[in-house]
Amino acid sequence: MNPFTSFFKRKILRINRDRWNYQYDKGLWDGLKALDELARFSVIVGYVKYLKPGQPEILEIGCGEGLLQQRLQEQNYGRYVGTDISDSAIERAKAAADPKCTYLVGDMDKYEPEGTFDMIIFNEVIYYSKHPLQTLQRLATYLKPQGLLIVTINDHKHSDELWNSIKGGFKLLDETKTITAKGSCVCNVLVPV
Ligand SMILES: C[S@@+](CC[C@H](N)C(=O)[O-])C[C@H]1O[C@@H](n2cnc3c(N)ncnc32)[C@H](O)[C@@H]1O
Image (cartoon, rainbow, N blue to C red; front, side, top):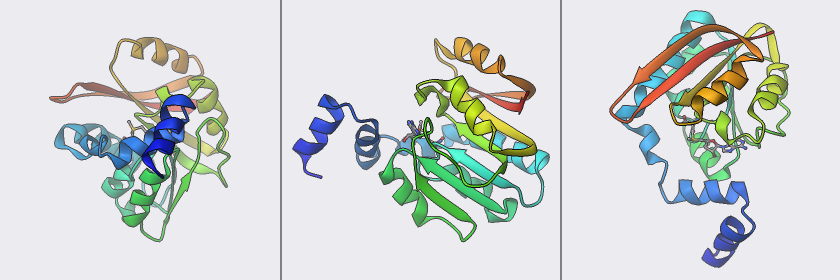
């Protein structure tokens, strides 16, 4: 896309997908691969292996470049579906995918998954939804019986308010807080009620 069209779509039309594509193409999210981001991924990997051992079916919403799938490793899932609003991020994720993975472009506020899942993961993404609780509840209907949601949110000035609204719609199974040089992040395992 030429720079003028990109600028117009990002800044004037304020199209979300173009904003995220621009940021990924500029490398502005390369920091997600750094050591100070490892802890939040490791907590999710631990929860998946402990709570759904074997070959769970996993859906990740807002998967970016597929970093969680790469850290989780193929032997720990039977099916992994990753979706993100950015086609640039999804193209990069596909480059490191294995045969059990499907990567798709989709907006979490509208996306309709195919099939059902043992776990649905929102890692540093739910605050980009127009209506977080509604999106979590709608996508939770794609969980299998005993299925679980995993949600992480970096601590920031609105995070308590966001957690309070989310926790109103789910039962909390477990919570972990990670602290790194960059900041702190809360990870919740949620059960639909
Ligand atoms: C902070 S990044 C986190 C990426 C990845 N989950 C991780 O932890 O490395 C937020 C991600 O949310 C995606 N995103 C933003 N709005 C979205 C939406 N409405 N639907 C789906 N993905 C969205 C962005 O493209 C981006 O990849």
